[in-house]
Length: 284
Image (cartoon, rainbow, N blue to C red; front, side, top):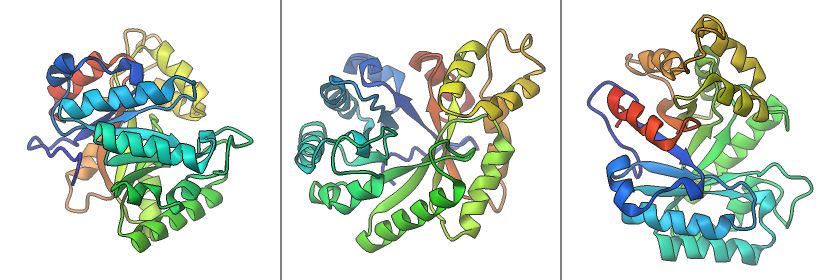
C-alpha cells in the first residue's frame, strides 16, 4: 500500500504530521525521514497556507516521501478553488494521497459543508488520487455526537466502495490507549472495517501537551496521561508516547490484531525529536 512502511521489528509503522513551514529542505529531509513515509501537511487556514503546502509537498515528493495535504472542506471557497488546489498538488508536487476533513469553521467559506461534499465532486479521482484519509475521534468531538460521526463514517465508506477508492481513518491524538482500542473495535462491529492510523503525540513537554490537548478537546484524556506518569511532577521532564503506543502495539502483535495498523505522530516537541524516537523504537 502506498505510504505504508513495513517494519520487521514487531513495531507499528508510523506516519508524521507537520505544518508546511516545518518541512525542511530536501537535503535535510532525506536524513530525517525514511523514504515512503507519509507526511501529513496541516491546513491551519492562513492565507499563505496553500502556497506553503504546495512547496512543502514538492520537497517531500523529491525526498521520496509521500505528501498527504489536508483538504479542509469548509475552508474551500469554491469548486474552482478545489480543482485548482488539487490539480496543482497532483501535477506539480506528485500528490496521490490526501486527508479530507470538515475544517471546523462555521459558516463554510464556500459550497462544501463536509468532507463528503468534497469527495462527491469527483475532483480527486479526476486527478488520479485514489488514496484518501478521513478523520476519526476516539474520544468524541465537541462539534458532533458519536451517532452523527458514525453515520458520516458509513457514508464515506459507501463512497469508497462505490468508487473503488482506498479509504483509511486517521485519528486525533489522545492518551487513553484502552479507549482508542475499544473505539476501533466498535467501528468494526458497526460494519466499518477499514485501516485505522492512531494519532499519538510525539515526545514533548507536559505543558505543551496540555496546551494542545485542551485546544483539541481531549481534556479528559490528559487525566489518563497524568495518571500513567505518576503525577505532574513525574512528567515535568517530558512525556513518553510509549505509554499510549505500548498497549496498542501489544494488541497489534496478537493473532487478532484489530483495525489499528499504524500510528500517526503529532510532533509537538519537534520533528527531530519525534523522528529520533520512531527510529530508536523501530517504527522506522
